[in-house]
Image 1 (cartoon, rainbow, N blue to C red):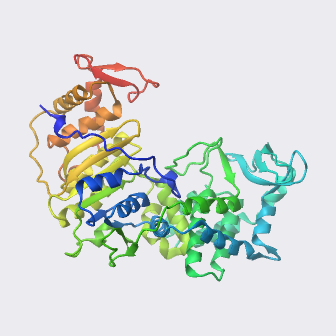
Image 2: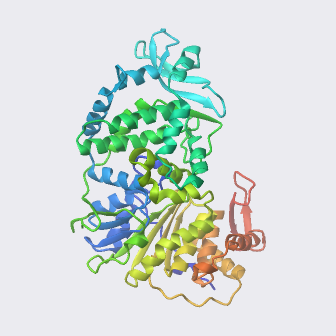
Image 3: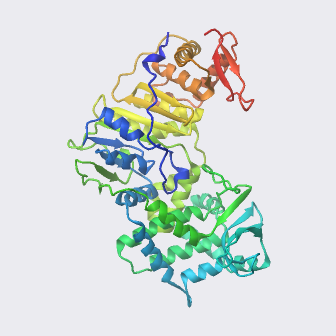
Length: 537
């Protein structure tokens, strides 16, 4: 009998929802307080903690503020830069001073700010004075917007109005689309990497002509400013936000988009990029206090801080004797073709071709399925398991769960040599927490069929739960049962591409067995809709 009581843990609650963060729509949503709580309950203050993925600055910032020294391996220049700026916690006035300097730069005979106000001007439909276009509503594959969203400082009106001939003049005045795209390509592609051209060109299709031209202008003007280095760094941080605001991955009417693929919505919003630059100050200056941050091999203070290694975890290991992490902790990222590809573009635009090098794999890879994710996670974790002390705890947080992501979250650590000690899932928050430990010898597989193991695990789980559960919860339980029975592969080469199909097929047979489970309909008729309960509790 598979006893889930040995694995199930109470879900570790957070104190607050995920805090505001630049580029949050691409990053794992990590509720505030979860990291600090796990650390204080499991790791002595001042100890070293390792984050092998560096997928969100929130984990490192929270760990450092809780009094731990966290070593973060980050291979993404954009995420590394974000962590550096947020750890410094600059006040809003410093960002505003950087914008003021940029606004005074010239485009021909005009101040840049004045030129951009003109570019985004539109006649007010109420008083006929010059209003400011907050943004434009487009329909995919059209050559002009269908509506203008505006605010008039003269009469105070705001709203939407039809796109007019006057607006068409401003659209045409934005500049040469071909020239902007040529410049954008040249800052990313290196000689000998022409095979990446098609990927970059496809990604550039998510940028309209006007935003791409304005973005290029802002970056070029910022590079020419005679600013103190730290202030120029703050301006670059704001431009990271503008790089994202400039694309077409903003569905309209406004939703809370979390794009994972470079697919233009049927109707989308073109943002006013000067307003976007000004509004980005709020989120970049939202940190409550600075956190000490050093770059490897310099150490942060024992009272807590961040040590940033800009590279893959495999390049960092083995660690010196005076850096022996007492724990591994990470918010594990979901595969995101959109974010990783865009980060490659933004890195090239902001820092030049060499900055794209760590992300060139994103320009060569088109498909990110669970099998690829399992191998990627294993690559990061296998070295950690081999190089760190046996028995090191590893707390992993998975968000925005799908069956494929759950399978990767469980199969990769098993194949890397970690032993599963605990698991908790919150359906309301769509989060999973995993308690692993390094150096646990693989148990010999239990000689039972996967179907029987999954059945026993689900029966134990539902009996303890005392209420019906949804598909993801039951799939997670089924996988956890297979892990505890030693039936997920212990060697990464044995993780076949058919593993997901086999595990889901096993679960499907159990869900259809009305002598075992009863289904209560949900909002959809799909297999993953509804909830299940024991036929004979």
